[in-house]
Length: 148
Image (tube, rainbow, N blue to C red; front, side, top):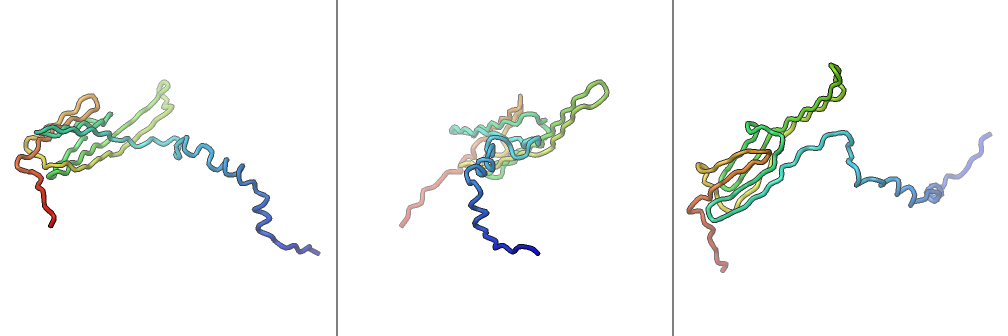
């Protein structure tokens, strides 16, 4: 015949050492990436400067071809996107030992204070850095509104 015992759920919790288990739970949480072995998506770093006549934008987009970079300007909204293709392959003789491929897209959009003269905008891409000069549209001035 089986012995009947009363279940006490709080007795089970009392036996746990809360500090030792929490240490193991969060150990290395912020130190290493969650998905180890996966390739991190590339980021586009921007630098926007301004003078009286134009905006100058420098964007770091390493490892892309200039044909894969697209810039669009709509008034004062600027969008930059690039298609990133990265392939690496290690061989020993004719045998492939390690192969990685990454295909993705990076994009940034931002607004400027004044509209851009689209017909006079210029861009060049050298050594992984896109440099775009966007002239300000003349006549587009900010107006002050008095509050009554």
